[in-house]
Each structure stands twice: as C-alpha cells, then as structure tokens.
Amino acid sequence: MASVSEILENGGAVVLPTETVYGLFAKAFDKTAVDKVYQLKQRPLDKALNLNISSYEEMISYSTNQPDYLKNLYDCFLPGPLTIILQANEKVPKWLNSGMHTIGFRVPKHPTTLQLIKKHGPLIGPSANISGKKSGVYFDNIMVSFNGKVSGIKDDAFLTGCDSTILDLSGKNAKILRQGTITQSDILSCLPEMTFE
Image (cartoon, rainbow, N blue to C red; front, side):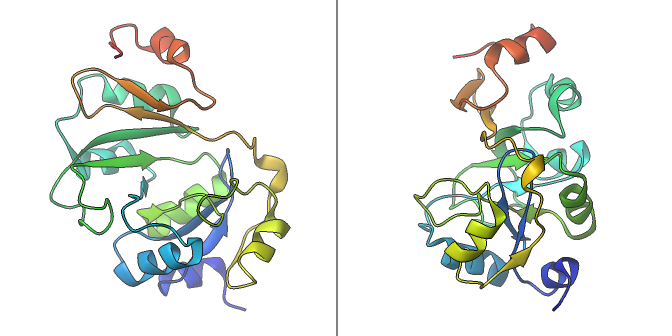
C-alpha cells in the first residue's frame, strides 16, 4: 500500500491525527483532491475549508489586513487547538473557501501531521467524519465510516476529542465562533490588548 506521504503527493486524501480530533487531509490547492474530500465527507460545497499550515509566514502569505497582534497570538497558541479566521487574499481559490472573503488557518500540534504539512502543505483537514456526524476520535471507527476508502495514521491516545476554538479576526473586533479548548480568558491573559465582540 502507498505511504501516507505518497498518497498526499499524488492528490489523495488521508486520515491524520491532530491534538483535537482526526482530520481528513489533502493538498489544499489541488482541486481534484479537495473535491475528493467533499465527496468522502458528503460535505455541502458551501461549507468552506481551512488551510492547515506550518508557519506564521504561510498565514501572512494567504491573508490580508492582519491585526497588529497576530504574531504574538501565533506565538502564544500555535501549534495548538486554535483556528484563526482572517481576510483571504487573491492566492486563496474561491473553490476552497466557498467564495467567502475569509479563510481559516489551523496549525495542528501532532508532530507527524505537522511534518506532513511542512512537506506537502498547505493542506485541508476537516474533521474525519461524514458531514453532520460526530467528529472522529477513534481511528478504527473512522475507517469503517469511510468504508475503507481512505488510509491514514492511527494515534488515538494523542487526541483530546475537544474541537479547536475558532477565533474570527476578520472584523474590527475579535469574535469566538466556536468555543473549544482555548477560552477568551486564555487569549486575553496572553494578549490583553485584544478587544472582543
């Protein structure tokens, strides 16, 4: 069987652990690979996808109008269970973020997954489940739900099972869209200058 790295390189999708739940990863700028993930997950096409990246420089490279405190925020919490939404720039294809003016960024903490992102990324990596079902935390169950159509890396012990916090920085004030492991208090303790809606 082809290695996970080979599958990614050849435009396939693989299940990889993060520090929260498993994700279904594929190359972000390969439309065929992205379409495959939408099909596997039975995900509505109007649900945008995040970019999984491995550096602050990549976050800057695919966004615009970033807040002054972004580097400090990155250094405090990433890699880790935080998804940051910023205004997208012209490098982000419309089919990736469903034509929205924003794009989400994720830097997973799992060392193997982060290494694969460095090698093949940016990658998409929505939760490894059929759309609308519970996020996947048990590798064997995920394999069953996808009927053996994907392979990946098993590391159930690394996962917390709690989704990442989604922090929207695309407007004047910060806004938490989904509460995960990292709280507003955690963020303000590191960056007291931030203002929230």
